[in-house]
Amino acid sequence: MNYIDIIQKLNLISLPEEVGYFVESYRSTLQFIPPGLTEQRSACTAIYYLITPNDFSALHSVRYDEIFHFYAGDPAEMLMIDENGNKKKLTLGSLFNGFDQQVIVPSHTWQGLKLKPGGTWALLGTTVAPGSKFKDFKIDSRDNLIKKFPHLISEIQRYTR
Image (cartoon, rainbow, N blue to C red; front, side, top):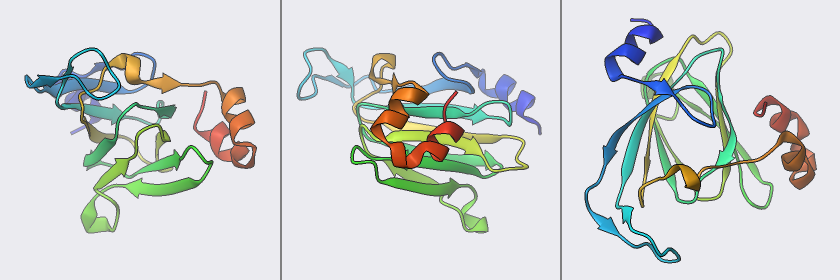
C-alpha cells in the first residue's frame, strides 16, 4: 500500500496552516467549558495525520496536551522544545523496531515532526483533551523562534519553513 491509497481510504485532506494530510476521526459529543475559557469544547478530539518526504509538521504548539500515536509506515523524528528552551528528540515508529509508538506532547510545547531520512510516509494520529480547535494551533516564524531559542538554531532551521 502506498500513501496515495491511505489518503483515499481515510479521506485525508491537506492540513490548513501546515503541510501533510489529515482528517478528524473523532470529536466527542460531551461538551464542557474548560477552566480559563468561556466557550464550550468537546471533551476530546482525534485525527489521523500523514506525512511524506515532501512535507513535515513545522514547529508549532497547541493549547492542551497532545498524544501522538504511530500507526504505520516509516519512522518519524519528533523535536520538542519546552517553554524554557529544553529540547527533546525522539522517534515515533513501530514498537517492534524499538521506537516510541505513543508520545505525550505537553501543552504549549513547540513540536515538529519529519520522516527519518529514506522514509516514504508515516501515518500517525493525535488525541487532544479538551478537544482541539484550529485557533488553539500556534505557529511562529523561524526568526522569532531563533530569537526565543538561539541555542537551537540548527534544529529550528530544520523544523521550520
